[in-house]
Length: 267
Image 1 (cartoon, rainbow, N blue to C red):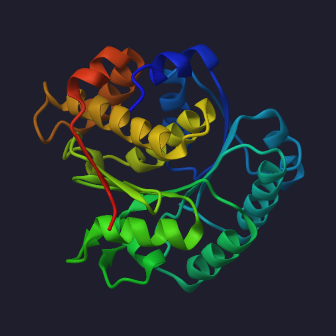
Image 2 (cartoon, rainbow, N blue to C red; image 1 turned 120 degrees about the vertical axis):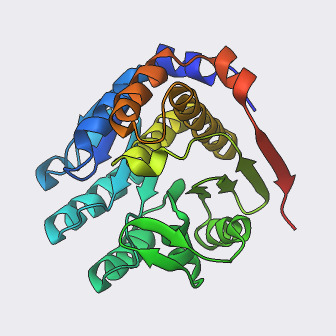
């Protein structure tokens, strides 16, 4: 795994286009700024031809989906594909309503995504694997998450990342397990949404999408892990702010020191 990508990210300072939801927009923007990136938050359909042309990545988040936003996502995604910039999909709560299910089918059929990043319930839905979900939470199940990640990666010819107690990342051939992180991530709103944006930023750094996604997820998990070290499990407000601070402080040396991953070829 590359060990200088945070330095490269801060030097490049990529402009990341986010079509996201109002619950997390501010947090996502501040998280990207903490890493030295420039966020732009827009879902105006009138801008969707132009903005992907000036940005280095597009992140599509289905958190508060509506018909107007879906049309903007489709237009932006096609423009991003035309401009050859990475596109990330965060399929928030994809299985919970018929509208979201129909929308994800449309998005995946009309846009080429470089990365799909979600929690276990969301990616299990895409793999058509039974999973007990609860709203937009990860839920619970007994299926092998590494194999679910692999299945979805092969199905959509992209990188897939499942976030949770262990993160699973696959390109259909390799599977990485990231053991860094913290139990506080699911206790704040927007931690997964911000990670999707961070992944989008890292994907601007080169062509090895699997390695860049792995580096993004590991770096982000380590920032959370470091933040929790001085907190108790109920200091969620402090964690919310502290995560931004530690993303701003994070460097490649720290990532190398803390990294705890298992990389294997899939069967």
